[in-house]
Length: 166
Image 1: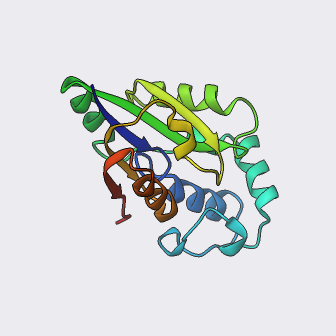
Image 2: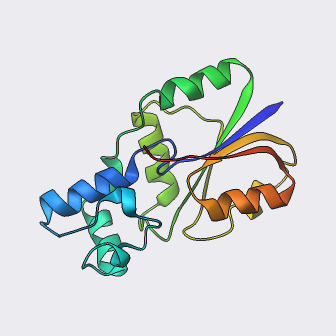
């Protein structure tokens, strides 16, 4: 079985752009453009605390409004048609309060993003430890350098790819 591992936020879906526009347009909060962000520590980019930001995102269900990147759905479908087992691992636990797994699962279904296994790991945590018995993964795609470094060091993944934003 060939296995592919994908991050979700800012790898398959355009999270930063949605958050940026929501803070600017809905709340009129001055914020640096998302292309200048190196992290989701929002207080580094706008005059709002991380706690208030997370609360706002949860109350207003901002994460359900994020649009997938063009062709994300088709890429996942094509890989599955070529016998790839698709794992989506997202660090949303601690970032989405109420049922991060269930809401992410609902989002993926509503946006036609096919997968075989969904892993919702803790925000800012070690994604490698959640891979369990998957010792041979063909490739992974993630937007965070620290995750890519950890995946490469684990020896579990043949090709580690860093998703760059346009």
